[in-house]
Amino acid sequence: MIDIKLIRDDPEMVRKGLERRGDVFALDEIFEADLQYRQLLGRTESLRAEHKKASKQLGSSREKPPQLVEEMRRLGEQITALQQQTRDAKSALDSMLLELPNIPHVDVPFGTSEADNVVVRSWGEPGDPGFAALPHWDLGERLGIIDFERGVKLSGSRFYVLKGLGARLERALISFMLDVHAEQHGYKEVCLPAMVKRDCMESSGHLPKFGDNLYHDDEDDFWFVPTAEVPLTNLHRDEILAAESLPINYVAYTPCFRREKMSAGADTRGIKRGHQFDKVELYKFTDPEESDHELERLVHDAESICQKLCLPYRVVQLCTADLGFAARRTYDIEVWAPGCDEWLEVSSCSNCGDFQARRANIRYRPRSDSGTQFVHTLNGSGLALPRVLIAVLESYQQADGTVLVPEVLEHYM
RNA sequence: GGAGGGGUGGCCGAGCGGCUUAUGGCGGCGGUCUUGAAAACCGCUCUCCGGUCUUCCGGAGCGUGGGUUCGAAUCCCACCCCCUCCGCCA
Image (cartoon, rainbow, N blue to C red; front, side, top):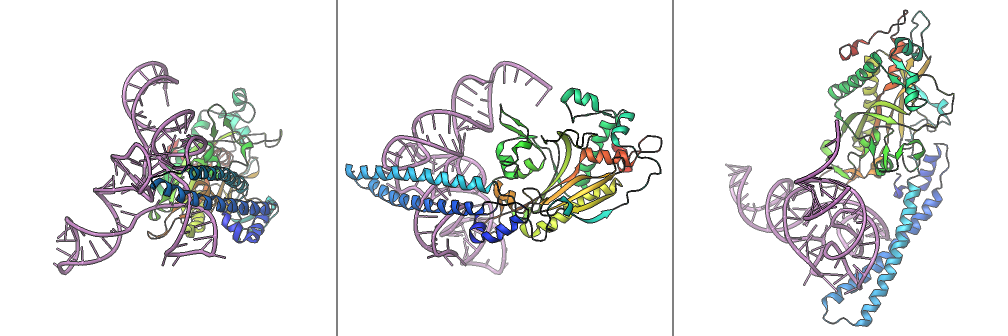
């Protein structure tokens, strides 16, 4: 959520910042709603002050003149009515604020589509294997490790079953990534609920705007997480963190569920995009001063997985038009998949600034004698599984159709 | 799911209609004393919102949301969570 005070004090800055995303936002309406809310609040509070004072006097005096009591009762009614109006005004304001995306950082390159994203560095060379590399769907079927037909039987299109060494490889990759981040990069491993309450989705920025992409259980009002970012953001909701504890780094494996209105025929082959997938997620709560620096570290931590797996990749900075709702700066990591002949997005690492922290009310105290301040939150995949599995299968395939196991995974297989 | 008990400040724990942001204790911070430390004593210790808003004024907050009342931490209703017992169950 954008700080309403920012909109009050410098609406043009906010407007210009948001417009760089390529959308138009009703800031004037918000400005008006805020004005109205504060007017109502002011009136409510002064009436309440009056009422409170009189009521205290009445309480400490012996006699209770019925005329005065009646007057007080009427005043009370007025306050209740005004209070309701104030509440309505506030929730109208809040619901508008919840729809506003984060303001892109000024350094983020301007763009109008993903075509304007910028490759900032790359590692490794997409090599020529010397034979026609097969796409993973062919490899997977030939090796009997990906069963598309039975996945569809169980759950419909875009579901698959991993079998034998395929399943084993999935598990090996999860363990490997968790171990690297927990043991070498200083993240604390956590195991999280994959179903959460509505509030969690609101804090992370997935609701109210993106409910279409989420799975929801009506009976118990559970929401299925589209990424571990959601429960991780909420881990410290409504807390004031100790300054010395920052940055707090977490790594978590969870399944992820996304409705994704996918057009039939697009990306249908293989396991690149499904309604359920596994992901290892990195997350940081940081001091605002440190968040940009910590984002660089987080990206490097994610990259190191590609390096250890010897998978060529590139790091892409998203332009203003391609930034996610909560993000103010994002780097994607794309890994080369020689079989399907494309760069696959395996990670998206974002600094959300105080956008989520404000929604989730996560603060810290810079000094023991100072007030509280919102922390910054950062998230990034480290990495997203099915696509890493694709890259491994396709990159490690041999001319004879077999697939080698990456050295770092050997003791996990 | 059924029955009973309970949710108060960083923690423990009083208060059960007005003088209560809330007794007391612990912890934390500052001070006195001391060569230093401890002990003892003294003082300070929540958050949010608004007001031409850094130590000023006002408002809100005792699980959450409603209600009764001139007045609610205290009474009523609903919901959530925790504990105990029973049932069910990986």
